[in-house]
Image 1 (tube, rainbow, N blue to C red):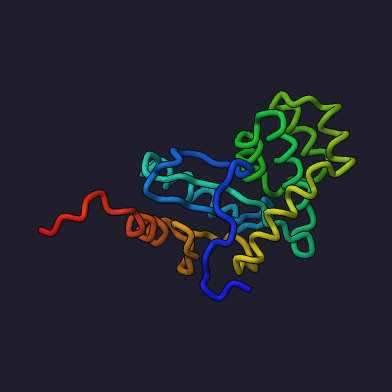
Image 2 (tube, rainbow, N blue to C red; image 1 turned 180 degrees about the vertical axis):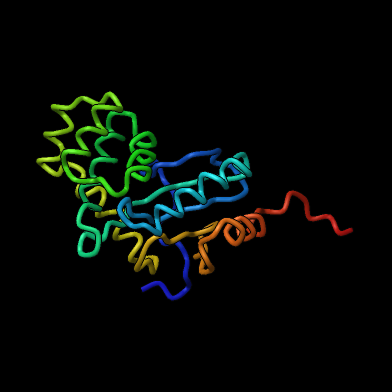
Length: 184
């Protein structure tokens, strides 16, 4: 168990990221495509990226909760299949925009709309090729103290406040590394 509320697994090549690696603010989200709170967080993150996009390095990690959200595991696997075909962020956006329709038929339709290789998509979904990849994200989340979604870490520290635009933006800006340490 992680009593320090710190991110256990640093961002690595395996993560899905947006922004510059050397950005002063690093935001990691553990999210769930079917969770309505993660859906709201998605909209907030989009707005924040528009506002301070050049200052933020964002990583999304899967935290499906199939016992609560029955399609969340399949949706996460669909995102990973899309990632293998170079379309993670496109599928990520689609899944959040279409949160209420994530059953198998819809997932195939989204894959088709994104121009994915459908026979490969179907094989990978049927064989759960990326289930272990999704499970790795879940495990790093659990080890970091995540128990629900969305969960955020700002510069490796757990964000515990309300998930609304103003509060999250304020926390991100406070976490920004100082550009210079000169006393005024």
